[in-house]
Image (cartoon, rainbow, N blue to C red; front, side, top):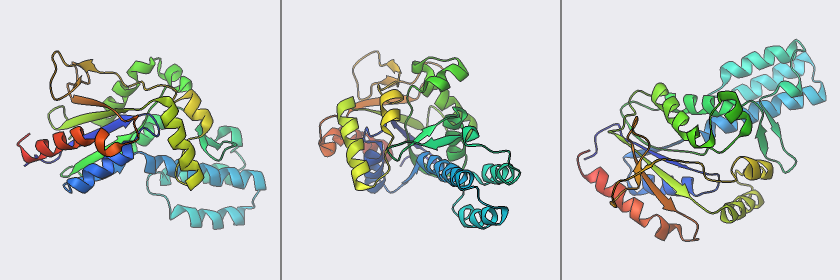
Length: 270
């Protein structure tokens, strides 16, 4: 059986099919727990929406305290940030321009402070139990403000992400991890994202889809010969990578190979 812990990281653009595959793996192989940085990100949106509402409506100190008690129960990842922002709000030192995220016209959100991309990933990985196996999915794109802040190119974003993951959870090694990168054509991703919005599911704002998730930016070192995997993340961190195309609308067929690969992995000694 697979040694614990074992980590499967599923990457790709928004609406590429990451959650679908993650849930299939967890259902097929119950040894894995599902995890994602989306929970922490949605909590940030919730907090900033709350702060924005307080600022716009010019809520009194009493109203802020009452609202704070209501929202704090929904916070798990960011209680420290919420408490700090509440104090800034009560003292009149918080403006909408200073918020980390803002709502978009289509009901989505836009990240205004690029540090959040790293921080949500760090906080999400830190809580993973060191003795358990996880399927962890997250999406990253070419946020220009992020690239400028850290002086990196788009092809370096995921390499930075995995440095953060390793720093947040020392149990993640090249020997007990793998990456599945899902590539899906932009038109198909946009259509899936549109349908999510119609259904009331989580979706990405159109602006973010067009600017941040325009292209898949995941890069890795290709395998020297054809085999059961696509390559390695890098020579510095040689975690195996499988890259699959999920453009056709048949996830059962698209993911069949990788599910079988993971099943074989679990049934053998890593």
